[in-house]
Image (cartoon, rainbow, N blue to C red):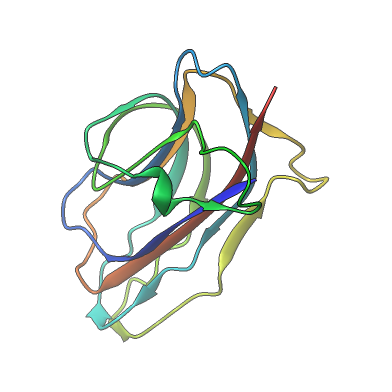
Length: 163
């Protein structure tokens, strides 16, 4: 089992913008089982922009910043390095179906240092069941409208790989 935490990054005035993608490469020979996604957005200052972050399936990912295996936490250190590709900093992705959206870090009025509660999706619950990414499939956290530099977006993903 693995986890990746994207440290808090500032909001992006660019639209669209992809914060993070996790992709199971074609030919990997494994399935990726998503266990948990967590997003805890907040505003570090006054912001009047309410930008929702979306989670979509993807069928391709390239560019952006490919994260080194050393940035992935192994829940059992003896496990092999992960086979997934994690990309940050606006990777180019081919979006598929939408999965879920996350509430914005600010309300659409002038609010300083507003933070909703941690928003979490537990795919291992009875509500969701298994969420599996076959080879050539992935997910991406992205925004479709411009954000605000005072917004902060910390992300965490937990998954396992197997047959």
